[in-house]
Amino acid sequence: MKEFIKWAAVEVRDFDTIPDSMEKLIIPTGQYAVFHYRGKPSEAEGTIRFIYESWLPNSEYKLDHRPYFALMGEKYKGEAIDSEEEFWIPIQKK
Image (cartoon, rainbow, N blue to C red; front, top):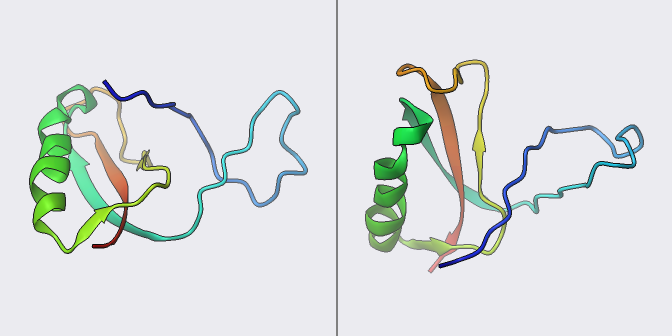
């Protein structure tokens, strides 16, 4: 099993105003494949499997070693069937 760290983060303009008790997460620039997902987050496993087991191996890209993340904007509604989010997968050319 692969170990990972899960963050809850928010974008800030600078680090001068964040509390000392918070850590900084700097996401390096690079190319991302963005996948729109609509549905319950608890049922996203099929979409995640498709990305890593089908789309990625059959694309001209490979996984890059940068953070990947889910963007939960105004249309994110938790476990609602019409909740929406984006999965940002770091990629680079093979």
